[in-house]
Image 1 (cartoon, rainbow, N blue to C red):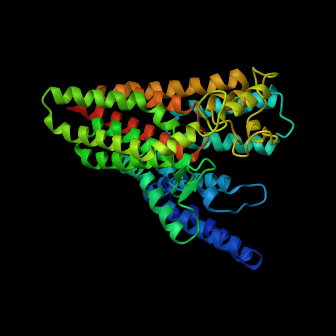
Image 2 (cartoon, one colour):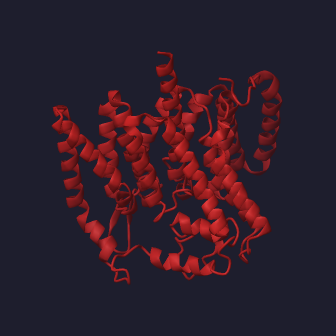
Image 3 (tube, one colour):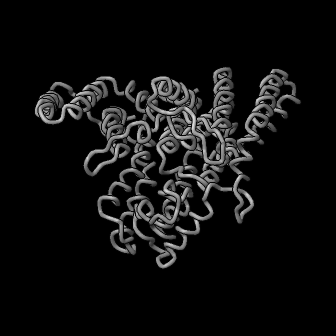
Length: 446
């Protein structure tokens, strides 16, 4: 199949002048800002590596999502936060992969929807007083960027490695967090005011929980799609479930209940039909769940019932935040307060951690009203349906449960705006589509 961008990377012709220009810039910067110069030099080496080894660079970029750089690295540049620089950097590093492999433009609907939200912001929204043009543009780029990764036409072999990396991301985060703890650079654990102890690895606990959620749900699908790698997948399932429980995060556990329930039902059904070998993972899974409940029961009760709230269950301030943001957009329900407005809406009335409402439906309703929010989630449903139509029949229910889990998780956390969730999520959807279409073409030829 001919790539969308049929460009051959003629490295000497296209990139030699760029290398010289960057070297000059680094030399000048070294005289004034040595640290920035060193960072720039590192970026230069990575850009060169990305050009010559685009597939291998994709592994590094995907692995980098195991670390919440904005919490580990305390550095900002004029007009840009470290997270914005990170997003820009990974986009640049994947440009050679996009040029070499091409883009699947029929997956562009979410980007079009976000562009539509930007259009609504400029011409129809009632701008929040603290919203600026730069905030709106940064919000647009940050939200749209992960969906470019969804469109890259990777090779089948590369996709298979990507999926294995996605399953290992929580383990990588925990291992990196352990190293940072030993080096006294970052705390491996987080102790809340309630007394609950939460593992956070090289992230914060909610971000590590997102990685674990993706690792678990992807492994559940892959055990059915690709049973030849069942041992690896069951091992990562157990590790990621233990990590998820250790984070003390409730939202992802509740979100994946339907998927987990069907998985156990399917295993029991196959066991009854004669697949006795499934008794081992079934018993191990039940033992792991029982052990996790026993170990984390105290933590979960502290987080859920330590404070008295009107809802009866402590939702970590979410109820107050949701009411606050809903009230803030009630005068502009159709078009919202402008893309990115939610990030500056907290005037100090809420806990500082609520930069966004921890509910993606309210978040995009606040930014773009009913019109923008419906446009975005409708585009996602169109995307999910396109993938559903090509995947094998044996995993369709698992895939539907995966999407349902995502939609439920979005009720209580920032799934579309957190790198640790949306990038692996888009990466896996892309890989699942590529592997499904590749296999179906082979079957047609046979």
